[in-house]
Image (cartoon, rainbow, N blue to C red; front, side, top):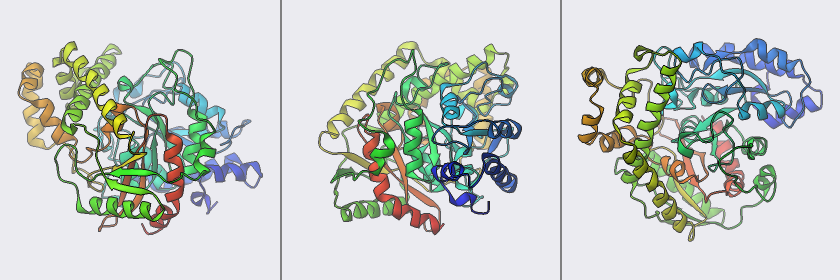
Length: 487
């Protein structure tokens, strides 16, 4: 099995179908990769080797029968096991039922043998939760693989599994994909169900899918995961053909607008700007029409709307954990501060910002009357170094009296929402557009920084048009596979 890491998931499934290898042998190869990489990467929060071996020994059917798989340790629930969400307390609380996501994985024949690392409550664009070792980037372990699907990105980039479970509420599929040279598709709102425990995650801003090394794996997984579950809040029309087939079709001549300007007025790394301009030239060489053009959206207002939702969701997550018995000291200081700000919001403040999501969606919809896709960076900078984005000690010290006095409302009056929007999203200001508008988007690895770190180009499509993204990604795939070989 020396060739194990060279195959994508569909390739491994084909070997199993041809009986050239057994599911058990594939699982042992994956576990061996865990043993070789985990001391450095710290990408797993739960290992389930015994459960994986039991599944590999049983009857397996489906398009990915026998392929090893790792789920993200938040929302992707497995009955009888805890869903830790990057929090030590929650690792003591088993959940009652499988999520629909996990049930569909099993019906597709995937062999689940662990849960990947995530920051606490998936709140950050890097994966360094307190109480766990920081998750590292296989491309350069001095750097982060991003977040919140950082563990998933690390195991896929390191060849532990060809694809892994991920989710994206503010960029958490696309950011890690960009930092580790992977393909990351964020589906449309409502495409993949998140029940039965939830109707929507983060008011519909978050979508469940995977991180992968090949476009065809992501497309085939969308066929596995998509489709409504009884009781879902709404139903999105199915594609005209399976996504796997749409991915193989020529995209046609597309009209693509692009921008490299940070929507919140911050710096963008020159290597990122260079890669987006190079991507635009590549697209023109493929026959597409490309021109500089942005939707008429106030990027800072959108960021504030996102941060307001972020505060409120954190407050709700903390309250839910406390209902299970968690204490203040069971949460990271940053999480407690965000929850305090969330409790300081009025219901009216929250709803007012939620209404504004419609403004952004309408403006983006008008843009898509003229353009088929929108090209922007996935991130403003290449992957940060481990510890580079962690809250500094002086700031942590200043938070303690604020928490002790419960000054959430007072802090909000000082402009905390706008300030945190600028500070927290400086590295990743481009991804929230897709989350708040519910549109599908993808990060495609299209270049390297001068330091040899991957850089992702992000494409946003109209709602429901994942097929258009997948077809273009397949067209671009030969280039990014060549680039991956240079890393």
